[in-house]
Picture 1 (cartoon, rainbow, N blue to C red):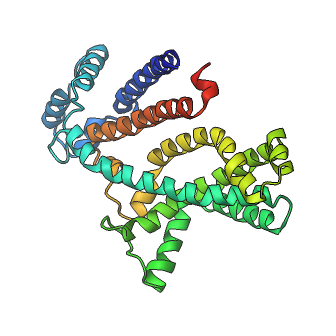
Picture 2: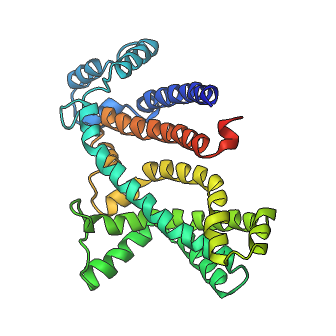
Length: 306
């Protein structure tokens, strides 16, 4: 198991290096002169040259790349042009809000998908299965930017149960977490249903039924734990997707996370801050995938002892 984890860690290092390289090239592949875009068309040539020099953009590309990697290795992602503070400090201030939203959205996703998938598999071909299938299709069909405003109109404006936006108590998390987790819950429901159907037709399930065990015990005690092994991988990948897909949801609900920070950096032409946001999100995605492999190896003896 240790050898497998080390091998996965070594495979993650080239992915992180590739992410660093792409984030570095971001400022060089933007159409036009990013310095002019930062200062505006009316900026003087002296101001443009001064900012270009302060950012190190007048150096050869190889030198810039080496300085960027050295800075990242020492925790220096540059200085925000808008806030005049270190990028890493600003990103880390917003990162907990994004993690909180993604984690609660994942709990919503699991809380909806696992029971629905089990019921759909247990009632295969019946009314409950068809109803869950229709709801899953609806969840996949409605995008975040449409579902979020609908939930605001219903639960915040019409009924008045929940706040419209901002970050505070648990009530501020309900609508953005539901918006973010709905589509992924629809995907996970189909995965759980498929995995459960495979287990329900297995020999050990038929043996458990032949021993006279109740159908509920067969489902929850025997079939479900084995069906959840492949689902763990999907959950890990979905958590990474949640981290990367919070931008739209954070903008709708004014959630003070990295996604909203990245949009404000684009609007302000704050490229150092934008680079930092993209880098943190991308590295988080890689680390979540690595953690998923570790968890899967811990819970599945077939992987642990292979």
